Amino acid sequence: MEKTVTEAIQYRRSVRVYDQEKEIDPEKVKQCIKNAVLAPTSSNLQLWEFYHITNTETLKILTKACLGQNAAKTSKQLVVVVARRDLWRRRAKSNKEFLLKTMGNKPKEEYSKREKFALGYYTKLIPSIYVEFLGIVGWMRYLFFCLIGLFRPVYRQVRRSDLRIVAHKSAGLAAQNFMISMAAIGYDTCPMEGSDTLRIKNILNLPMGAEICMTIGCGIRDEKGIYGPRFRVPFEEVYKAV
Figure 1 (tube, one colour):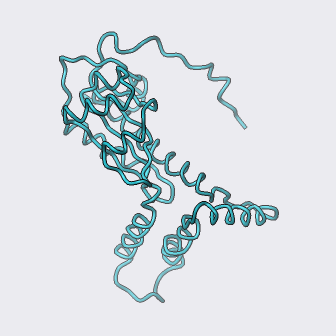
Figure 2 (spheres, one colour):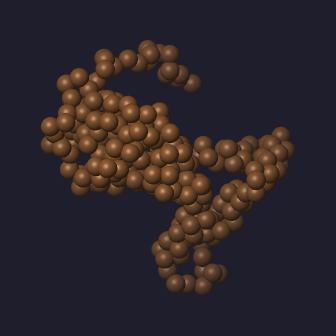
Figure 3 (cartoon, helix red, strand yellow):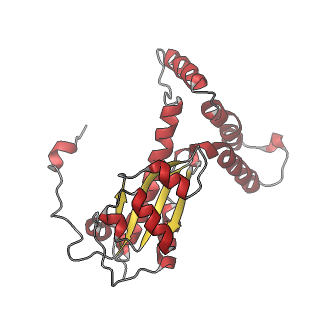
């Protein structure tokens, strides 16, 4: 029986040693990845990819790239979450095609105001933010929007570095969906940042524009798999009612 959302969140821990006698079902892990892609994402661009590693030899190679840490070495499977800011054109086109399909085959003059805005969002606004050349265009956009911001609220995350963060935030939200889904069915995970991301990109044959968000170890926790009791700073320190 699956855990409730609250139960899954409370159950989830970063497990660093997995029971070597217990296997996990690749199809169940795949279903958890399907849950991951339902996560919220900036502008619905879905600038992510998920590499589900089950091959024994690839697991060994990736373990070395993850610096040999136990969370990788004892994993039964790995999931590599990849941020793909470079795919913005393809994803914007997919959104546009979906919108046209849902609007039905009708003349442009029959589009509602909302429909026109949605189409313009992916054909005009997204390109105006994501088009880039050596980082220069982004800085020009940033200065332009800062100037506008002197007179009214304006979106300012328009530099290449900002858009990288946007892609990684969306990928991180999806990763959390995945890990909570795994916890709900009694599977364990550990998100790892400590890795040689360049080596991981080469192992997975990823293009230059792809960026590793995190590598997630998967398995069933060993009795010594959790290194200590959960610690969180007092809630009062992080909760601010305004």
